[in-house]
Amino acid sequence: MKEKTVFFCSECGCESPKWMGKCPGCGQWNTMIEEKVAPENSKNRSHNSKAAGKPKKLSEISSEQEERLKTNISELDRVLGGGAVSGSLVLVGGDPGIGKSTLLLQMCKTLDCKGEILYVSGEESVRQIKMRADRLSIKADNLSIMSETELDTICETAGKTNPAVIIIDSVQTIYDSSITSAAGSVSQVREVAHAMMRLAKEDGVTVFLVGHVTKEGAIAGPKVLEHMVDCVLYFEGERHQHHRILRAVKNRFGSTNEIGVFEMCDSGLREIFNPSEMLLSGRPQNTSGSCVICALEGTRPILAEVQALVTRSNFPAPRRMSAGIDYNRVSLLMAVLEKRIGYNLSTQDAFVNVIGGLRIDEPAADLGVTLAIASGYRGFIIPDNLLAIGEIGLTGEIRAVNSVEKRIAEGVKLGFDKIIIPSGSDKKTELLKNVEIYRVSNLHDALNIFDKK
Ligand code: TYD
Ligand code: MG
Image (cartoon, rainbow, N blue to C red):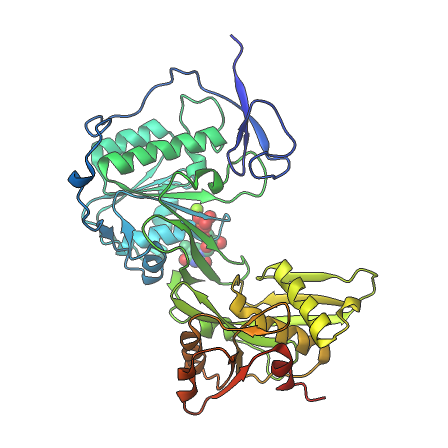
């Protein structure tokens, strides 16, 4: 019998019987990869049928708060929504080398877990992990390390040792021998995640899966798994910079707005309790094209510097580039400056960058970004101790944003004593001593504060 093959998208896992240049699911090009499919009667790994197939009455299900395992790394706990829910499946994604293994190994040290922890690595040998653990000074008696890539062996070991927590590093290196495709392919990655989900849901094991983000090639990325797991965390950062941002993109047990900030040092990851301070360190003084904004990441306000470089273009179509902020938003704000203020930006190249690798997707940053661009274009200097808060509408009006007080408080804490806020904001903010609050209702007024010419 001819072996049946199908095509999977390595980005989103979309399945198709024939090859396609563009994935119909996510629209990416050249991501469809051919894989053999296992015969229908492939073995069933479900080893616990007690709970299976028996629906429960809604009233019979207890609604107690789910038990949480505190990791005691406060930045990680925050992103997880107060610790990992026991019996949940957590996916930690990120570029190779960003620090996923380090984070999870470090977590073993402080994890508030009564049972055993099983750390399965398909990438490193047991000795390598031991060396890393020594470097991180981890002495956890309940931690067992295993270097294994075969799924059945892992499940068997888990069945024998009954761990409370399993860490799989990484899901792309583990393979199921009953599937013919290579480790890391979409069907393998899915099968591994399924097996782990069964362990989590049936035996109440808390499972952490590491998934490498892959730009191309035949390795399936964590996106394929996102819908299967309870919680998806992404670990981001620039390789040549030391700080790392942990972000929840999906969380069935908490908010997805929270971020955790870490710094990679010689002895592992260090938590950053005050990210604003770190993001603003080394700011240039007295220069044009720089403005500080305040973004609300979950419950926490974070200050960041936006820089804009505006120079005369040598091309008929000027270059526009943005990093850390939506390109279209920058185009929109530049169009507002052009139309409502009368700047001639169509002859100018513009580069906008949020310092520190932070990604801002909040309209409250509009005013700061626009002021940075205006300052870069006109050459006026925005005072170093000024913070700009406000959303900009298409007519150039400055609209109120949420949690203005929280943002002001963060600014004041870090020594900002000139703060621009939308005129529609709450009156309570007037009461601050030694802080100059400018209330502005449109972009014209805001620019008039600095650009007196
Ligand atoms: P790692 O956790 O292996 O990344 P991942 O599992 O995401 O692929 O992290 C590897 C990088 O971290 C490596 O470049 C070295 C650096 N690192 C430190 O700077 N300090 C440390 O204490 C450790 C353990 C790693
Ligand atoms: Mg690793």
